[in-house]
Length: 113
Image (cartoon, rainbow, N blue to C red; front, side, top):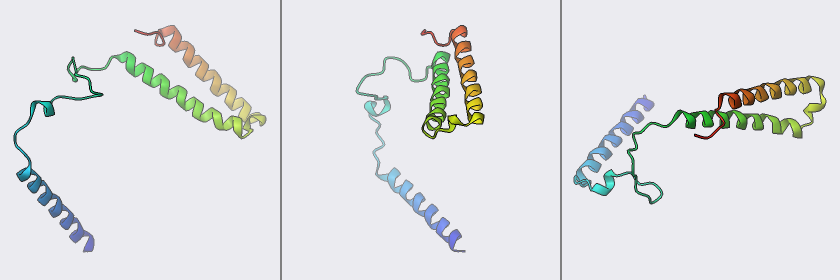
């Protein structure tokens, strides 16, 4: 029962705050408040233009190789590579990553626009 009462009090408080905010805010919108502002530079093109596919490919490549580094650094520092099984797993993992890099190179995803 307490949680229902607390939820109703929170909802009522939020409703009151929205009404008070709407009453005391200025209804006049300035031109500068409708324009996007980033790093002190004016925008020359519309912000609704979609990103190029190349940007997404670079992002995916960055994430994949970043995850590879996150996985590989602890293996080096914990001396798990001295174990035969971990050496085999790491070799297979590295080969898959190298094959992925080769495929991306041959598809031309690594070249700039």
